[in-house]
Amino acid sequence: MINYLIRRIFTSILVLFGVSMLVFSVIHLIPGDVTMAILGRQKVSLEKVAELREQLGLNDPIYVQYGRYLNKALHGDLGVSIRNYLPVSKAIADQMPSTFALAMSALAIALSIGGVLGLLAALRHGTWFDTLIMGLSVSGLSIPTFWMGLLLILLFSVKLGLFPSISNDSSFADLFLPALTLGLPEAAIVARMIRASMLDVLSKEYITTARAKGVPERMVILKHALRNALIPVVTFAGLQMAYLLGGATIVETMFARQGIGRLAVQSILNRDYPMVQGVVLVTATIYVLINTLTDITYVFLNPKIRLQ
Amino acid sequence: MISKSSTTLFQSNSPGVRTFKRILRNRSAKIGGVLLFILIFVSYAAPLFTDKDPNKTVPALALKSPSFEFPMGTDGIGRDNFSRFLYGGRLSLRVGLVGIIIGALLGTTLGLISGYFGGWLDALISWFTDVLMAFPDILLALVIIAILGPGITNAMLAIGISFVPSFMRLTRSSVLALREMTYVEAARSLGSSDARILIRHILPNSIRMLLVLITLGIGSSILAGAALNFLGLGAEPPTAEWGAMLNSGMKFVRQAWWLTVFPGAGIFLAVLSINLIGDAVSDAMAGTNVIPDKK
Image (cartoon, rainbow over all chains, first blue to last red; front, side):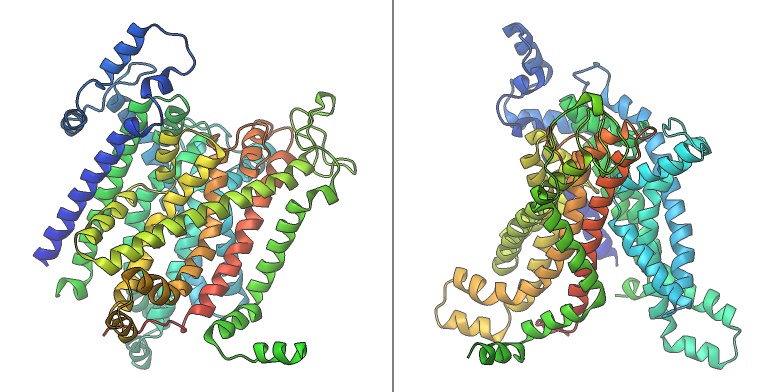
């Protein structure tokens, strides 16, 4: 098991190394000269171009530039925005809590709604209720997040006037629609997973044994079946929390809500490359770290892997 | 003569035909197929259904609600929403299809090379795809757009590249199992070149699993394309595209519901129809796996 852990951590470090290289090269892969891409069609003096090249550190050999980038990034310095001259790391730190609150609320919605519906569908396997839930779940997977968000705005905000369509803080009212928009498609996935996992566990011999021993059905479901059926879902929840950080991009843009996803889109549109690099690097790093932690937790949770 | 040959074909017992028949029998595949056919037909035969130019602006007719003349109303600058919906469908469907084709071509090639040759090449390609997988959801596509700049062609490329890891991994794992098969060994001992073995013997046997991934992937690809367009990183105005139409319709969500409901429904129905077909394809392929389990 120790070998597995060491190998897993080593792979993650290699991946993070690759991520940093890819993010660093964003600025060098832009077709044409990056300073021209940033300055666009503005008429500027040669001094201004030279100043920008210096600011971006483009005059050094590429390996020196990468070494400096990595060293600074490891010390928490992600450069300075070329649009508002604020430190990138500060901008990200300011936006992160909002995205985190959104992702967590969406996950809570996904697990509670998806969990209950998936469990009920499994218990009523083959009935109209099961078919209905599975139908809703395919629809949930096919619905574009941004369209569902707009429909929710039309219903809850325009027709019923219950929640604001622009959301800016983490109060319940402001968070409700964005979190629902992000969480419902995930609920569809959770419902499918729980259903499949429960059906699998319910067909196991130890469930038949428990029933044969006369254990009340409620106990069979809650104590014997559900606990085992939840193992894959726990792993999924970990991965999904990290995944939602990326998914927040559309929802944040749509509800004009603060957050790193919206910051990423705005920076791309503004050609603020240091900001784009910073946001992408931080999000990908969090994603890799959570993935690694989830894998390691899974090893501890699952005796089959632990004993290997 | 014709009827005889067609009967022979119909009664063929080849696994491919059997699988295809199984897909045709599936109810959700039928619903999905009909739905998809209608969407493709109305998009590509748009001039049959409307004679209005999707880009012609008539400010005096701005924000008209749906009526006999404008079945889906008009937008903020008086363009006919119905013809924009029909013509927009072409682009949305094409973005999805081209995106997945790019992903499948690149990913499958990398997977074939990685799985067949192994060694440092495998390690390098696997590491590269692991790095690509470190970007959650739409983030990888955003990075690529940041590099290439916004635009519809770049959006297709970005979506394609974000599908590379899934195709690479699937092909690689299938090649790892197939390259040990006796018929591959036989081909090798007969002196076939690596390229011939990969293309003639290994690829055809991986194609079924790839087909499942492609069918299911088209739906995700359409969604990703619409998302990039919705974020303003794809089609340039005034091009009609469902995601971009939703973006411009969002400003009028309080006054004109038709500008958000119809284009969104287009994306939803397209993705739903493909997911229904995809589920049927994956059900039909289950149990017809040509690669034996390694035990």
